[in-house]
Image 1 (cartoon, rainbow, N blue to C red):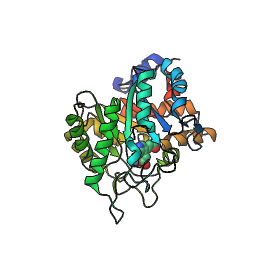
Image 2 (image 1 turned 180 degrees about the vertical axis):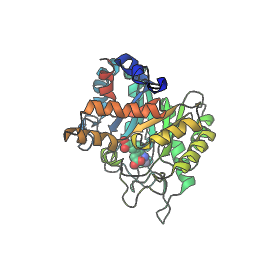
Image 3 (image 1 turned 135 degrees about the vertical axis):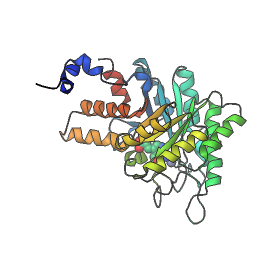
Image 4 (image 1 turned 60 degrees about the vertical axis):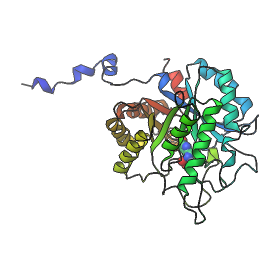
Length: 330
Ligand code: PBG
Ligand code: ZN
């Protein structure tokens, strides 16, 4: 006689009963789409290492986004890509240039799509001549206090321009507190969401993004500020710290290779929404594998998304967002 407790198949024999096994289902409002915005207004250039993604100038944004918004796109995250020859300097002065691509895009998108939730990635690496995420000392190491001051200034200027959310990805110590304090001082803390890239790991997964944004470091790497990939405990401490400094949402990045960290973030703070960034290398890898015949791209993308939600994220930054908007309608 079979033990009755050994029978599980009956609970998921039917496609519908299988969907009932999930604790969380993907909806369109969970998706955030990354946009790379250049300072040459008519540009629309495919990024070779990031399939189906382009760098776009201001004049290309509304035509590109209109059909996506009609399909249910609710949120974008903006990355500035300054191409002008004099745009980069040691302190990233053009990051919050009033006429630069990010501030101009915030204004344009708010006007064109009043319902769209606009997140701005806040970092200096796209704007510094050395390509690091903060301001450097003479010896090439980070000057943390000066970096936090500059990054907070940039975040506050994005908020003043109308961003709904600022998301610092620089990994300086104390930047969440610096930004929150800055938002309070200018009277914007009550309406601007602060999303911390709290558990952001160093590694090989950001390669295509750095090509897209032109933000690879000119020397060295980011291992002294982004977290070591083996650091589960340190990630929990970073999450706890950023919550104490005023983060409204915690992000884990990369996503698919750090599912344990997503799950830890949810456990450390069950009452905080957790975001996950399925990053450029993770995305490009699925495309390459599908092209090589390893699997079907859609099935792989859906399974990875399921894993990210199962781990505990309810906000997912993904280059597959346009596809998911279609797939969710089927
Ligand atoms: C800027 C930033 C990076 C990403 C998001 N913000 C690159 C980096 O830290 O080198 C990576 C996103 C991706 O790979 O898709 N600091
Ligand atoms: Zn950076």
